Length: 99
Image (cartoon, rainbow, N blue to C red; front, top):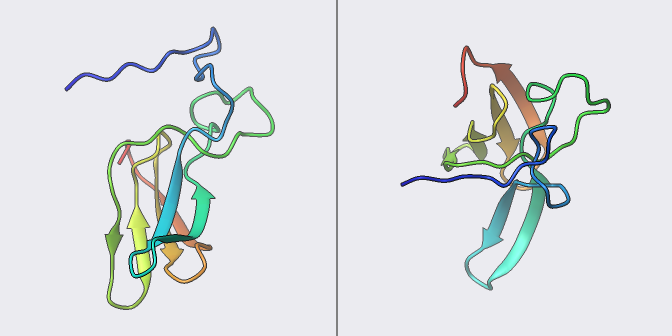
């Protein structure tokens, strides 16, 4: 597979942000429980302030029996833990490279 993002001269996608999100779907009734932007542009374009939330992503989460959702699929170098009920970020840790 090959994937190319159409980028502006700044290196960011041409369409409006957010460009990526983590979305929780209730499979019993087909509704969206919560939707949060995933990743930031802070590592991609350090001169852009404030950083834009929601970068393109590729990959999926791991969900624990204790109600945590772990994901590192964004373009920044973080592993994040979300609350399964609310979508709140509970923790994030920097990785040595993209997840």
